[in-house]
Image (tube, rainbow, N blue to C red):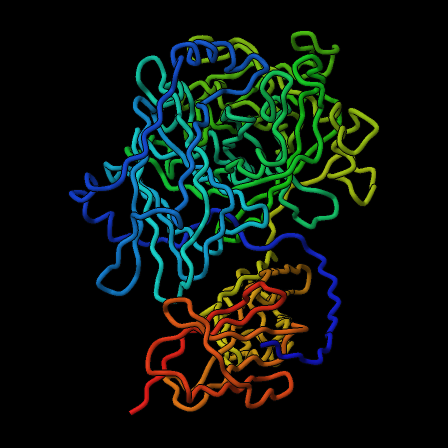
Length: 636
């Protein structure tokens, strides 16, 4: 039977000024139950992958450390693992559900997972750890969702990972993301990983005395885990300031960090780049264990030299992170100088071999130079000096690192060179910031368009902290409710906002201007879900978080169990025609009568002729079901 309703349309136009919302890879912490029971690992389903022609891949990297090619750290091997299609779920004693699997790549030095269609519902927690329990990351939650559906996590040492996914009782549908690839990270010929602790012994930690005057600049330097196709590259880079002082999360690095040969990372690749912040020793000494780091996932290309290996030019690259950097990172946006005058002294700060942050010092003037086949005077040549705690150099993984002048401003990025702990006095070469400023006439071939958006004509610009950063964040106590029910929203915004503007599409009230909105009631059915928007502001900054189709409102039925009749509570809705049918557990359709169709809100159905038992009420429009509800008939 079809019930026809009149309908009305509410149009709400919104102008959202900020494209940045929730941060990416910051995790919520915690220890999953499976982490505490290593003896149970053997019973888990094992997904095994292998690398062919491994020796050839290793040899191909002998020339890519600092010769105008980024350091390859591994290759991506295909997987196709979807927890929603898996039988590896089990119920825990507290009522939550747990999914655990093993992923193995024999011979790998480390592994990392890459995801597509990544979307975790509220109430889900994802953890990844190695079997030795020496590294655990997570919990990743709905706060890590991004509109691209892409996600990736940092390297975890070892050749086997365990993935553990937990869902609480509020989760109605199993998460359906896809673990699409695993990064097989190569070992060095000596068996080491090319990561923590693997840089040359002459290198100097950034928190030694050599770094005393560079404590601000170091907070802008990042390690980059990029991908180009199925190859994963490692570089260094730096956050960089712009004259608008809006603290857009630009990262400055080298063009060759975004390509292999003449093939560049595409949009999907860049959505899975991983950026490591504050990865360093707390002291001058090398720590015994890997220090903690904060990682963010995803970026987009804004400007670069282009042309691939046939046209190195000044070898610059500017990318924009997909997400704002949360205040917990305390990021410093480094300043820059486009003045083409050699600096008498300065430093570079970098991640050689992917190791913790190091500092190298030069105390003789830079030399204007060419590099390989580049046009003369596009590069700064530097030679590193012996200092109190060592003799800094650069290595594979240092590519793209910033070269600072004696005023603490970036004036270039590392392209290549010959220095190393066995070649202390050999030169390195940095593409000139002055050349990159207007390398080409188009925005995608210059720094000027992005770093001087106010067109001030500045020759240099200082670095600064974003003291006023705010990030809009919130969570709901549930995201699936029955029509007429309420949701409680919790504000977990970061920074110190002074103004709040909530917009609840389909909710009552539809707008709230306080920090905590309290309960929001939804009287309108929308099984696809209503958007929720939070805009936070202070005197100088604002941020907007839009959660698309966040609150799903489904019809409810009462009384249930029923006797003579049942009402289906619809609330207001946008359906033109709704078909109602009652089916028993064998799929047989049963007749019924509509007693009352109360405007937009409910349908009352006569059920006195149904026998005791369990039935399904199915609601659909144009043959497409939008909700199914279990109905129990129980008469005394």
